[in-house]
Image (cartoon, rainbow, N blue to C red; front, side, top):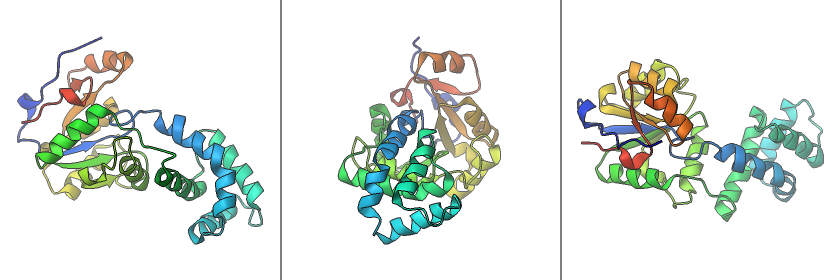
Length: 244
């Protein structure tokens, strides 16, 4: 299923001054965390903990995890067992998150992991940055994790493209109040902001807050849904987004 490039110029009032992008499914593969990051942590957690248990930040995070699972005397083997059981469910317990972030950071720095970013997103984001548009992310993942992904991406360090990273501390992505808060933080009127996402309910919330909106539909299934609405501009990828 194909569709001509969707031009946004007819809906820009005023010109877009800043762009807020979703991450999962929009600039990065929606399955990257589930298919790459979580399995990597599950596979390497035990060995990593044994090697780095003496680091202050690792020891502190391990203690937080021990107390959260009510096993303050748990040794490394038991911690690994508990962590791997959590990760095998496809997620990390909240108390495990800091340990997993430290593991991922080490893996990113060593080149064992690279954050996935779509080439079309890289090229377009770079162009917008060159045009002096401020770029931000808004994702369900923590701001720290977002920054890791773009800093250690498969296209190099993209972190300098972004002026800020918004996460659930700002609010739910499906609530208009979250986008109102982002506009206030960015210092621009909502109508001067463009939100790009692969989720219709998120775009609906942004539109309700006054944002410009664009639906990135990368698969045939997504396009079928996106094309059956008239509220948001629709593109197959970032290369089709044209701003004034």
